[in-house]
Length: 345
Image (cartoon, rainbow, N blue to C red; front, side):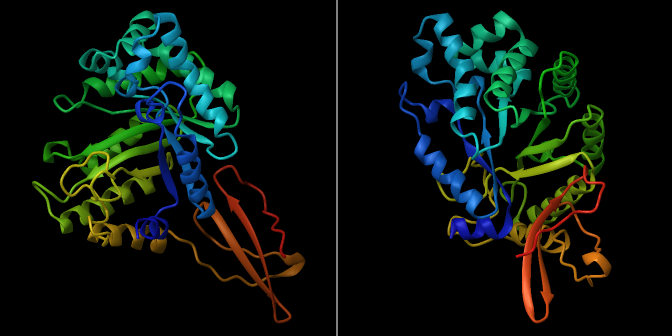
């Protein structure tokens, strides 16, 4: 039921690569499990993205027992290792997570390896080193820098910090392909208004990089309910979809089933513990698979040309000739400026 609900709604999936659980014991990788998940995604028209490769909060205990120089090398080399191992299967990665508070997280968790690295190099240089490893492992991969746009207590502080990190990285030609923005609206005071959402979109769009909303949480528990969650979800997705810089949105907890969620806040999922869809699931499906899903009929004119107006994405074309159907697939995005040639079989 989980897989069915997922593929009927979504075309983008986050595959877990938290170091602490991917390599619990040194050298013992959860490779086959992640490969199986990723291949299922591809088989069902879903783009898999790996998350995250460098994060202060998920370094395994065994690495901290290593010599500091060795531990540092392991922390950076695993970035390239995972990207290289999954080359041809996963082409998009959240390379580094939450650099704006990397030092604070490391101190809180006694993650001595991450703490040493951040103290030795500084945030921007850590990002640079991680992304250079990532780019070398797969020059064609899409590499994302992921963080919160602001903290709980003051909406301006970390926004400035994250923007500063992004700006300094881009000024130093760090190969960042996209900016990941987290939006965990668990508490009512953390909910984004329409105005605030648009301001953040406009601020980060100035960097000229695609924006990925990597971790979205809107709950139906505590201060909310399922109908309110559905309304806010549809509103938030519509705002993001309307902005030309936004290229991906990830709902963080798909299900409320125990052990399958990440945030695990009351009502964070789109489907309930018994796998039945909530109103938010249906609301998003009406948008993603309905309003924003292009279905068009066109008459083929001279030279085999056909025209239609549609959203960016992947398409399947079916042409009827003399009672026989021919099909072909094609895709287009912002970069396409010329007619698309479609091979039919």
